[in-house]
Image 1 (cartoon, one colour):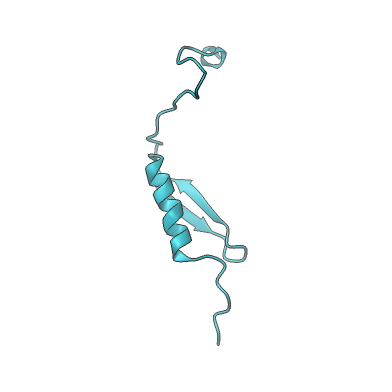
Image 2: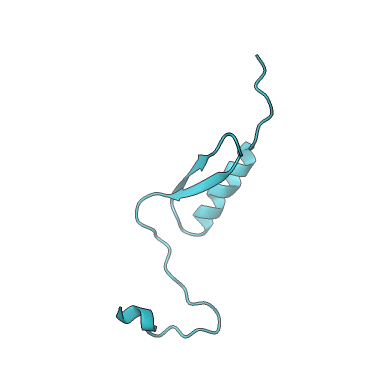
Length: 66
């Protein structure tokens, strides 16, 4: 019995995990075998700190007081 065409490759999964690691997030992946969609799922508390976008002040925003 043939396996058929693969919808994803190991290198795709490796790239997704390396991207998460570079972003400072411990993660695992979920793969939809029918479509080949790879979903990054964070594990535990997120370690990445929020960084203000360019042009925005690092001060308190209106959302901090809610």
